[in-house]
Image 1 (cartoon, helix red, strand yellow):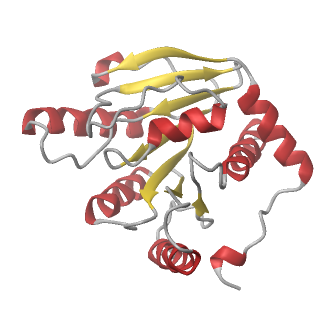
Image 2 (cartoon, rainbow, N blue to C red):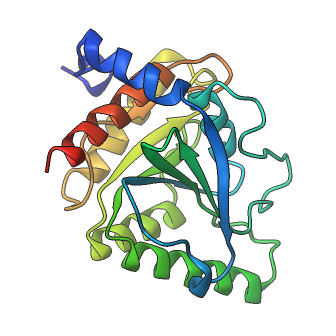
Length: 221
């Protein structure tokens, strides 16, 4: 069985829980551009990370069924802070600054790096980071550096392939298999690779169910 042939791993009740979770009222609650300006911890938190222009904001909007919850931009490096969103009082979502935009000033990149490192080290309520990777290109060196950072910080993460409606089926299947192989020995990696498309809706319901399952597990601890 290849990774693309894997079952969704969720029953209908979990899919419905995911639908209800992300159908709840969602609102922007906090922006942090410095490590000393992070909001107080409370409740379960998840975060979305990825290279600049990989589609983080578009995926957040697709998950919540809203077009403008997270601001999208065609200009790489636009998101320069940690943006926090409350989801019906049950979950906090964090849109992290994109990494790897070469045209950004070195001082700004260094600032983003310090902010992200401080956030990952200090959030005991951070249940998982969803690392978004462009399905057309796969894991790049900067992605691997972020995965290493997450492994060292012992923060659970799951790779989400974005723009998965663009590669041909065979190419996407190879990309999933290659990504799974790259994650096989990484201690903090969640093994299931989730292909998604904010444009077509591919994998969005499955990712909602992934988050609902995670939330249920964390609340039962």
